[in-house]
Length: 256
Ligand SMILES: Nc1ncnc2c1ncn2[C@@H]1O[C@H](COP(=O)(O)OP(=O)(O)OP(=O)(O)O)[C@@H](O)[C@H]1O
Image 1 (cartoon, rainbow, N blue to C red):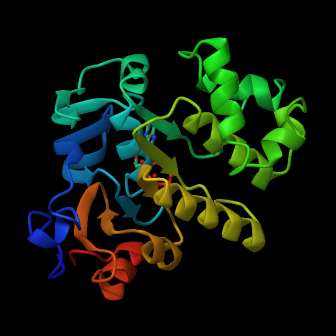
Image 2 (image 1 turned 135 degrees about the vertical axis):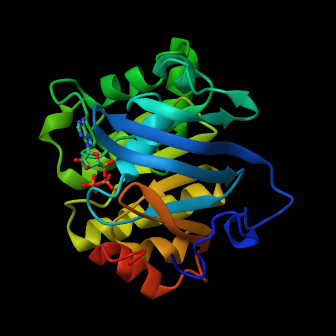
């Protein structure tokens, strides 16, 4: 474990100590049968922060994000959101409580239109309220105006990613979970995705981001956690996270 590896260090606490911790995972464990994907994981996200979860393929990052919204099997530990225990709540209840996930690979309904996809994200809203929220997202995602009635499956990868993020935002979540939003996109489109994340930060959306592009992600994040083989190997402020700790985790040599 690196010198930054003790996640109970002050370095792993929210960058602004005055900010309220809204998400707290304690000793979280996720397993698929005999496969332990996440072990004894402690993680905090404070209001207004961007926190990034880094690590190689298979480190357990998606399992962690999915566990927060009840989509992967939590076998130990607890998760609280805004002080409420959500460990055993259904995904529907968790989403209604204010957490939205943009899953890896977008998962849009490709035969449905862009507007219909967003309507699903805002299913809890009345129609008039949905229309207001849909409009409100147009300045950040002009594609919504231009392609509202197009089939989502006909859009480019970058456009689909924007629709997926907009779908997660339409219900005005207080915590947004983003799973590898830049995956498979051309570099210029990746830039646009990171610009959107920066704009969301200015709008005070709290974000927990899983990203392969560590260098890029650490530039916009306040803090980071580096996972390897289901555990946190290093944690701290983004500016302090040592490249060596990250490189080790990606090469699978962390803790060696
Ligand atoms: N549905 C599943 N059934 C069985 N094992 C799974 C399942 N999903 C993930 N795993 C296993 O759990 C471990 C962690 O996978 P996870 O997808 O969470 O990692 P990751 O860090 O998000 O990697 P990637 O970047 O490839 O998505 C891996 O060993 C993976 O094979």
